[in-house]
Figure 1: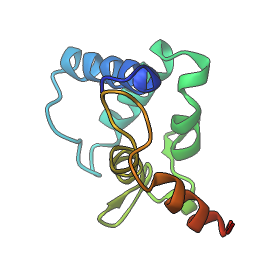
Figure 2: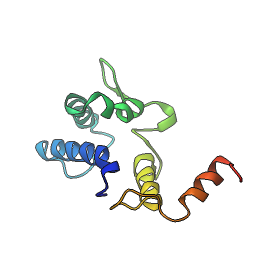
Figure 3: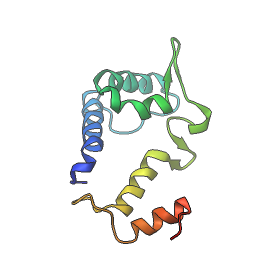
Figure 4: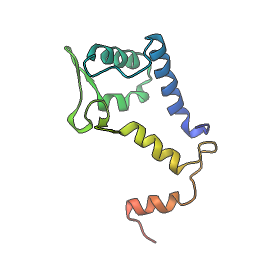
Length: 119
């Protein structure tokens, strides 16, 4: 997504990729490898700006002993095969032109329908 409105997403994605490269991680750690997940979250919290950690704070909580996941968002923002972050970004791409950042045709109609606003 090239549009300026997506700069915050690009910044966070680039920071996360940098951490994964530094840790030499090329695939998601297994559920058995909690320590790797904890390390990733700790490093992200250390480099992300305050306004960039909001989602991280929602999906994972570091305690003195380990990492905990709030039940509503399962293990880090996914529920079975549905990953909320990926799903959200797919919806953004389906609603906005990624080059200009402008809404695509019918986006306003979809928004009004989802909010049950009728003219």
